[in-house]
Image 1 (cartoon, rainbow, N blue to C red):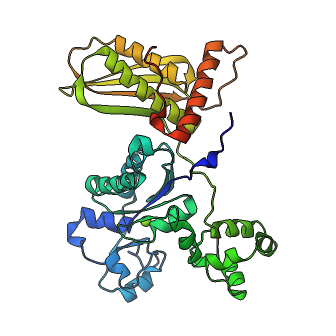
Image 2 (cartoon, rainbow, N blue to C red):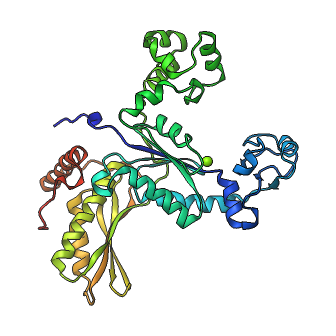
Image 3 (cartoon, helix red, strand yellow):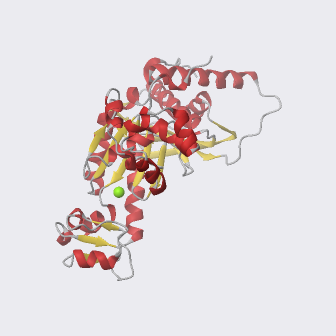
Length: 389
Ligand SMILES: [Mg+2]
């Protein structure tokens, strides 16, 4: 079976915190709210690393020499910055993002891409997911973020910057061509000052201008860069969202609408959770050796049980069977409000091929592959396995 990956457009979000360092300072020291806060400009030799929106009104920008910032904004509050605090909040924000996709690419301390393709059936409309993320960052961390949602990384990054601060810009479907056409070339990533000079010399101002000339022209003019520029000016960019950070585990858990007592019903939930975990592992090309089960009773008492397998796995059936064995080992005493399944202890090296793989294992791997392809095309709920172990 071969299915083209580009069958449905991708959904890529880019999140960028608003004036991050300065906003954290204003959050931790409420007396700074409404004031022009400038982080990184505390010595005259320094460079501004962040400026609050109040300071931006005076023309202060990041990367500006502190001396200049002081001159144009003498009433500014100049601070040294507290990197460990920024990192702490950054980690919290990335953790929120990973609740919505296993594919999160952190670009810097306050910026990340997340691939939400194919998540609609599981998480609901993607626009709502983005609004929820913004809301969670505001309520849980007290900060505003801007999000851009588009079919690729290139456009998502431009979109997040479009309506800052606290922005949410969606560039999908019919909006893509009209949005791209009017884009000034200096907004296009990869267009540096040298390319800008070349473009200026031939009267090119917008992406629309670039797209009017043929690919061959740009290839001759700018080489590989020209090809990249041409496709971006058509709104196209195939670069994947890459998780640089090595994940330590994959998990899925749910709080049920009603507490559950029946073991059969609980196993049915474990199957759905195992499917999500298996799918995430396969998307990440990771296999883990330890399967864990979490049970929370209706009085919030929580139990965790783990089992380490002989070989690492990303097979749904193996994860499910192991989770069921762990459940059977627990003497359930109270109604259960939550279960969770996770796989950890990832294998660092690619797994060696077994000399004589058993037929059942091969069959399960093939089944997973087929189900992944079908779900990619028709959504998470398009398929259900039987409940039997
Ligand atoms: Mg930012």
